Structure formats: structure tokens, C-alpha cells
Image (cartoon, rainbow, N blue to C red; front, side, top):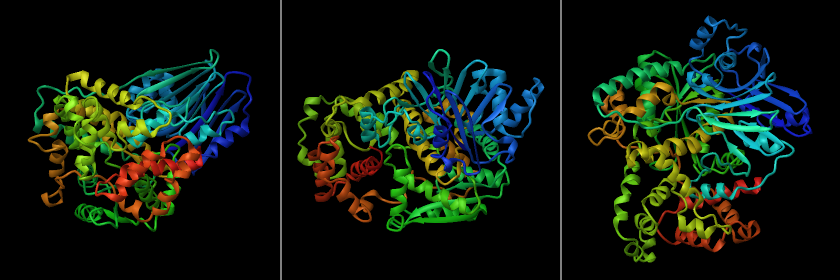
Length: 618
């Protein structure tokens, strides 16, 4: 796991090697073990290395070989198999690294190599003979890759902070991205918080023709739920167990210590059980809980760890004691993101690093692939409520807003245009359409609602299933733009690699072909994984209800440890100076928070995180 960055200048070269090194110095946390760079007039490539496979100098990057230079961040789990195939085709190797295998795979198959890879990756290859720079991101977007492009240059990196260091970067806030953040709590799709700066999407590759001064983006893979009409539950569960055993074993490839994050939930239970009971690995496991009543899952995780015989560490996140770490973490992120797990995963990664554990495995992705979110059915089924004519829905008085959470949300949802708008707002869980429209001084006409619809309809059109349309959104946006962004940024801030074996190739293939009635068998969500879990754990260790991994309640932190920050960052003075938002609208929401039982902490937290982030970045 590493950090990569670089640039190409199309006009007369102006950036120098010092500019390249400045980019490199923004991401040392991603690679504390080694670093290197390659520079020629008009082009620079730099790398910071977290050594995982082949710890020797032979795996140093940038790796140059026969006219090709590679920068690589990630892990290719099937690299040994590919290496044997390439040797049979006449390729020679100087190292035992997956980096060199990736380089030779590209030499042999070009972009066709991407479909042969099983793992998580983001990389750049410079072909000096052809004057081409080739970049690619893994199928599901576990590893990040961002780029900035205008008529004079192309700049790329693992993190935006490296791109911002490039001397000719134009720092202009994207209002479309701001709309998306307010709605969902994270910036979605290819958009980033800065204009002309974009994410290479999962399953895409990008080619820069340096002589032609052009850039071309292509999709080599896209996720689609294409359920089989003749699937049998027991046979599918049996097949899933076989696939998970094989893929989890591949995900353990490493020359350094590996640990596992567990919560006592189904996904991590299955992961830890297969690794310890089936495959015989001696595991270090980590769990995290809060000191708030109802927000501590450590006891459940400890019970599973004791049963499996792992070396377990339980961590407790205290709001007061970790306020400074929260503030530090918010400012470490290149984009505002309002999920409090930015602190959770960093806290675990920091402890693991102290223990000498450099790689952690997470159960992330199981919910999105195997229908673990009960609210998927709610978001899909809300279309029935919109059979009521809009003029009748609009007569519900707004004074009912403050009676309860359900009424507060229900009244707002009923006033939307259609069920897809409602599904979009329910998926976001932050500000609603009308609030965003009134909040933003620069109106955008619901820019991100259309993005939600495009992703949803892309999934829905495949088989006409509303549920799979919503699952498509969760997989392509929520998991990637929120989950993986947090997983990568928070863990790499501590020099720890996080892997997600549920997103390996064969697990994806099985999940895509399994129909909803198999995943929610006899009314049980995530039934396939629960079936596998039952083969390893007794019933009393199985959790029947879905629980989110949130170790602290936002409302308590807003009213307690962060009260001073709320007063400072959500003040009228700050809003007027910033000239982005209408303070009177925010004041209405703050009054609801202060004077009713309605919980609007998601909205306040969303705005607070943005304001803290904005003070440093805008």
C-alpha cells in the first residue's frame, strides 16, 4: 500500500523536480517505509511506499524496466498465478513483488490485463517510447485515484492534497460537489470538491497521449446485479462458503503482520471464523465501542473473539478524550465527509500500528452485496406512497414537523415531486431538497438528485427491480464515495493498509447472480451470509438485527464535547463572511435541534464538519 502522484505538462515545461518532491512530501503517511521519484522536463512521477509484499530494495518504486515506469498503490492477490503465466510467455523477473508482475502484465496484455487482476489497486504506467501515461483503478474503487486536467497540464495522485501542491492548480470550489455533500454527507461520483479535479471512477482506465495533449477515459468493468431465475438457496449458500474460503485465503497474502476488524456482526464474524477455524490462521482482532449507552459492541465482539481463540484488543472511544483527534482527522481529509467513522477506523488503525500490525482486513461490502440494509426495501417501496396526488400530500401542515422524527421526515418527503426524489433524500440522510435549495445562495436545481437517478435507473433498467436499483446506488456510491474513502484515508493516515475481501472477484460474481429472494430468504436479510455464519458460530453469538458501526451518537457530541465548536462554526458571523449559505435557514434547523425532540443531528453534524474543513481549505 502506497501513495502515488505525478504530472504531465503539455505546454512549455515550468514545474521542476522540487515541485515534484513537494507533492511527494504531502503523502508520507501513505508510505513511511521508502520513497522515490522520476523526473524529466515536462513529466514527474513520485511514490511513497508502505512495504507489504517483497520488503527488499528490488521492489522500490518508481520501478523502471525496458522503457516502462510504474507507480502502484494496492495489492494484487493473484500475482503469483499471473507471474507463472507471464514466465511461461517469456517474461523475466528481478523481484518477488506484485508491482513487477503488474508492470509485465501491462506489457503483455495492455489494458486487457485489468480484467485478469484480483485485488485492489490504483496505478500509473509511463511508456516513454510511446509518450503515453496510462492510469487505472480497481473494479470496485477500493483504492483512490484523483486527477486534475486543463489545457496546460494533467496532474494525478492518491490524495488531492498532493495535487493542490502542484504550482499551477486552480483552487475553485465546486458548487455541484457542495450540493452533493449537503445531500449525502460525502461527495459523489467523479466529482470532487474542486473544479477541474476528478476521481477516476471504479473500473475505469485513463490514457494521456502526451504528444497529442489529450486525455481519454474508458470503462473496462461495471457492477450489475443480474440475478439468476433458477437459483436455489441451499446450493447458493454452499457455493458462497466455498468461494469465501478461497478468496479470504488469497486476501491474507502478505510479508507483514495481518489483523482483522470485528464487531460481532455477520460480515466480520464470517471473515474471522473462516480465517481462524477453516484456514487455521492465528489472528489478532480489533473491535471498537463507545462509552455511550447502546453504542458499545465490544462485548459481542469479545465473545466471538474468545470463541475463535483470537488475540483480541477492545478499544473504547471517549468523546471528551478524543476531541482533538477528531478535529485533526477532519482536517486530514481532502474533502468534507460527515460520517463519524472517519475517527473510528483511524483509532483502530493507530492501535494496530502500535502492535506492529500493518494490514487489517474489514468485512465492509457484505451489506451492499448481500442485502444487509433493511432500509433498502423502504427506499424501494416508498414509491407506493407517491400514488397519493401531490396536491393532497402538500396539505399536511408543517407544524407537525416537531412532533417526532418520523413526522419530521415524513412531511418533508411527502412534499417532494416523486418517489425517486424521496429515495434520493432517504439515501442521503442529511439535508432535504427544499433545505438545500434554500440554504445555498448559488442555486443548483438539485444537481445531485439527477446523479442519484442516473445510477438508480442504470441498475433498475437491467431487470426492473426497484430494490436492485437502490442496491446499485449503495454499491456504486455509498460504498465507494463514503465507505472506501473513509477506509483508505483513515487507515493510511496511520500507515496501515485496509483490505476488503468481500470485494474480491469471485465474491462479486456470486453476489451479482444471486436474486433478492435468495439474499432475503424467508424474510431474513443477508440470509446467505447468515447461513455460512451458522456453520462456524453457535446461535447465541449470531446477531439477528442489523447494527451500524457507529461508536458514538452525534447528538451527544454536539451537545457536549463539541458545543464550543457548534457555537463558533455555526455562527451567523461565520456564515455571512463565507457567503455560501443563508444563515436564516440554518438557524431554523438549529432551533428544531434546541427546542424539540426531533433529532436533526445529521444535518448539524454535516454543516459543522464542512465549516471546520472549510476554515483550513477555502
